[in-house]
Amino acid sequence: MESDMVHLGHIMHSMILAPHQDLDLAEAALEGEPEATATILEILRAPELRAALISRGASPTEANDIIGDIAGDCFGGERAKGGLHRLLGRYNGGCPLSAYFRHIATNRLISVKRKRKPTVSTDDEDARELPGAPVAPTDDALISLLRDALIVSLGRVDPEKLVLIRLIESYGIPQKQIGSLLGWHESKISRLKSDFLAELRSLVTEEVRKADPWLHLEWDDFLGLCAESVDLFAV
Image 1: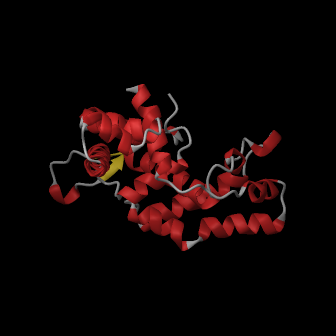
Image 2: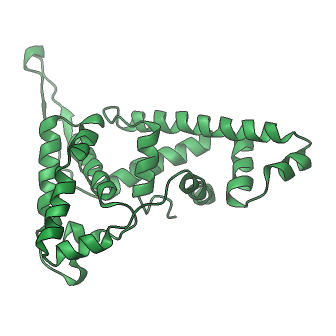
Image 3: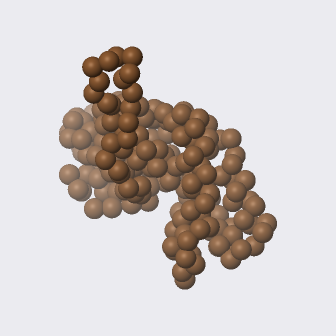
């Protein structure tokens, strides 16, 4: 299964556009340059980030609180070499800053939601949610959610289609050559490839909803989060 994750990494990355580089901006902000700092705060306060959180299941208050906490954590804390003790110092330029913040915000939303559990009450009118056991914010929550969904989905996907996809996407064998070896027309290979992606999309979406029913992720959201989660396919 681990080798399947590595191969799937190649497949998924082939479906995701290459990111932009904002590393210079982040480093300038960490050095205290006012213009760079103002730009970072503009990115955080842009309506798109708040809208993304709300679309994924956050309440307006939760979205505002999460964004405010991220803004503080970007610049707060000890100034270590490279700013690594600050949230902004952990940005490595592997994706746009806006995507990095969206990833962190979604991860924190998962932590907020998971630390709440329904209260058992004999009075329906008094039923409400109270905080459960504290759950420390962690950058692993989102990665674990995505990875688990992929692993389970790979175990359910049609193995014949998975092998064909690995041959095409990971090993670079032309579809026409595979078709010749199997005695199939190239169009059949194309249909199987499309069927695999449709099956994977359905299974992954189903698994994410099983884990966190409140989390609203469309397939494009999932691909975007995969692109932002640089450790997702590490095994």
